[in-house]
Amino acid sequence: MAAWPAPSSRCCAKLLTAEADKLDAQESVSLTRLAEVVPDLARAGELAAGFAGPIKNKAGEDRAAQFKAWLARARGTELNAFVRGIDRDYDAVLAALVETWSTGPVEGQINRLKLLKRSMYGRASHDLLRQRVLAAA
Image (cartoon, rainbow, N blue to C red):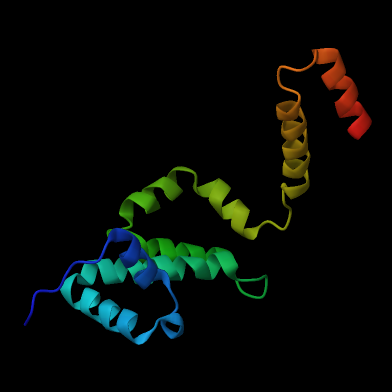
C-alpha cells in the first residue's frame, strides 16, 4: 500500500467533527483511512461529535442524563483531560445545560459599556464618561 500523507490537525478536526452527509467523496475516504490508522482518534471524534447532543438538545429530553452518560463514555479516552476540566467545575457546567435562564441581557449591557469606554479612551475625563453612560441608558 502506498504511503498515506498524514492530514493536518485542522483537517483531522474537520473530518472528525463534520456530519457524514456533509463530507465529499475524498473527505469520506480520508476519514475512513484515518479511522483505520488511528482508531483512538476516530473514537475521540465520535465522542466530540456526541458532546453536541446534550448541548443542542432542547427541553424535550433529559440533558443532564445525556451529559452524565457522555462524561462516563469519555473518561479514559483521548478526551480525558477535557473531562477532568469539566469535573473541576461540574456543577456550573451542569447548571448551564439544565437551567432555562441566561446571562445574555447582562452580557449585552456589559458589551455596550465596554464599547463606550473604549471609544472614549484618552479623550475625556471620568465625569464625561459617566454622563455618556447615563445618557445612553
